[in-house]
Length: 229
Length: 235
Image (cartoon, rainbow over all chains, first blue to last red; front, side, top):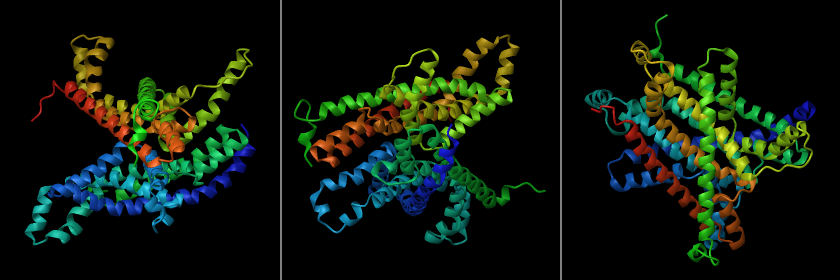
């Protein structure tokens, strides 16, 4: 084991951490906002909207993320009318393609998690909210969504971890995130084990922090479940 | 879009894509098999009463589930041959050994799938009520009979939905081993789009092939669950 190389590699990989964290946070944030809408579409009684949501979720959960990334980054370029239009300045950048693919992907998974949360809200709670005169947006904002988020939190924590791992795929479309830099150094030094350990430790640390934060907010959000001291 | 690119035979890439689908399926099945094999030992170690045995299993599942799949593949792809060669050196063989991309891919995905399967099967084991094992002992069943008649049928029932998820993950993870050069669906689509300048056509075909595989396996797992649950009364 070459410890010097490991210590040397560490700061180099940390440069990529910046990109990794950007990709995770942007795509999770945007994906989550759209996921709420998608979950509502999935639960709506309108057949067309429901079908749209189902198809979207079916596609993004049934295909590998790598295909989705390649389809956006390489695939879009096949169409000349896109290459000549103004959106091309968006699609020619690997960074934005990666963010788009990750966002669309996490949106599908998160919306199923949120749907599970919304469906777990007991009928009695909705009924009593209605009896006090709440309806529509107010009912969702005050009663359904807060309870749903609390229910969905553990599953959403898993989704965050999956996303942290998923960002490593963007290294295949030339983005230099932690994995991208690690691959570059492996190819140069040909010591895969050392680089693997350092890069792996970085991802493990992120995921460790994420699980702690999720656990902490879970405890904070369920004060009524705590036993009396 | 030009669908003539996808015809079978020499003019199109249709037959190549179908053959690649077969390779994807083979790698997934092999990896799932390796994963299930690992998960037997993983479960036994996690349920063992020796601290170090439990620790090793915990470290394995935590690490593999906490780092990106791509890194695991890179480790085995770049490091696998070296490791095999240094083992071969101990036995007095000094030649160059290059591992087959299929083998590396299956082992890498298998190791990942094994970590997830371990957690699923461990959960299923713990879901069997202890009272049933006591009851089985009280009617005079020995350990082997308890295992085959009481534990296995129920563990299978509890584990099937989880294993179905692991299978879907495994199937989708095989897309990543395109980086090793193995010609599965993704690699074939990549090669074909490189030589025809029609990336969208081939990647959307790849996506559809994966959708067919995931949907078909979903149906199979659903009927397997029905079969395993046929003794359970439903309200």
